[in-house]
Image 1: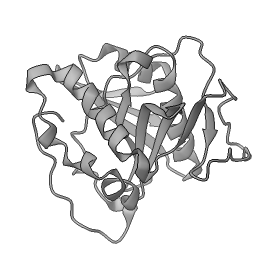
Image 2: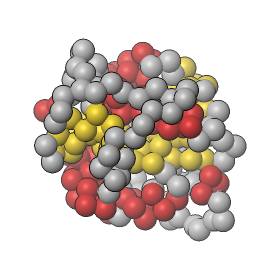
Image 3: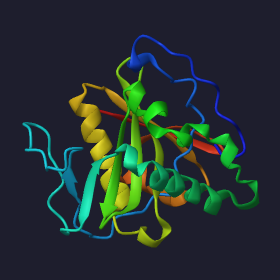
Length: 212
């Protein structure tokens, strides 16, 4: 969360038990809402669209230049700037980039802990991102959601969340949780529209959960 440093991480044997407490206070950046745009094409890290699996609905093919894919190390700078840009926009003078050291090395902070990071890539520009972080007891947490301001209200935030939920199901998770900021009404509306239930809410934070 902007203005508060994240706790230091300790190595563990199992990525599923990695960092529930460490990342509890992560807030989602502002998310776009769907307005009828065709979903982005989904591709893997290899650059090829994977074949659909049984009981695993994939997004329909959208614009040829819109691609949802796995994060690669070459995306590091663009994804970091996308997430921090959303925080700068949201928090203004209260924004403190030093409070988010996890974004300095996304592979080390997330991928190496068993997380899945996806991006929406339009002709080489990363316009949306989100991360599914595995937690203990077959639970997943969505963190580091962000959509570029110029590309909001085009459905990219919805597509990212839907893809992360699909991945959670494939991994056998029974629940996906998310923490976002109560004043971000567009984010609240998005999660509610996708079937997430309120867990708790105060003036600062809203917690959601989706049973799979």
